Length: 241
Image (cartoon, rainbow, N blue to C red; front, side, top):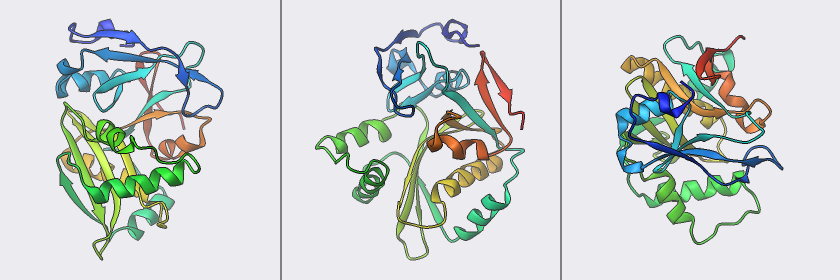
């Protein structure tokens, strides 16, 4: 169902944003299709939206709706049939001492400090403006659906990873993960492996990883988790390789 009118709930309206610079493809302009009103999007309805290619940023539920580009493809991993590659098995074993603590959404100074370090590493030279704390709260700590915050610490108790995950009735949706940018051992990959393990333990078939862009190096890691499906032409299509 690629048209919002085909969603089970008829209570939502959908509007298209103005153009804004694309975060992944330089010199491209992007638009989003946004679901509203936000206060009506509960966990059940949000799950319907995710299965139709949407995801969320805070209270903002959207999917790409660009005029001349269809590069952003929703991707989900088949958690119950996932087979780790040799490299992924090494990453999992190397980071085995990490311990997880699952909570609801909450402000934590240590989490925010790690987020700042992560953003500085990913966007060098961009600088940290005075609104970063507010942006962090709105982006990661604001939700009307079933959302969990997970912190991962090493054996010494040092914070290494923080993940924000939405719980759906058919899987988990990875909202955002940030981690120690100076640590070795592919912490981002390990966090996805951990989420896949949680899906399997709960009998949930899918891990939704947001959007995948084939030509974006930042997105390459997502297609390394196989088997996966992409949402294209209004339906989920299994990967061919």
